[in-house]
Amino acid sequence: MTKNNSADIDKLVETLNNMFEGLSSDQSKNPFEVSFSARLGLLAAIITTLGDALSIVAAKAAIEEEIKSNIEAQKDDKEQEEKFNNMQTQIDKIQEQLATMQHDTENLKRGSDWKR
Image (spheres, rainbow, N blue to C red):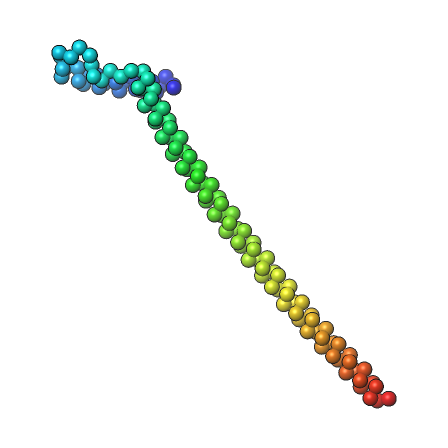
């Protein structure tokens, strides 16, 4: 606990004490006097709440990073699939050309056999 936080809590307690000092003159103990442990508990609760808020921000950032990574991975997969499809189309065309060349070669062989 820092001195500033303790001083702020002390000022708050003192202000509350001053406000209600005249209301109950027959009370021997001021109801707004708070023990150090209670003030420390309040400070711990505030710090815990700030820690929880920071945790939420970190979780949100991690989720956003994961989503961005997934989108990029899907984009890469799509590009790879397009390249694969393009290569498959080229292979199919080459196979067709090879089949045509084999057919033409067979026809030439038959044609030369026929001429003999």
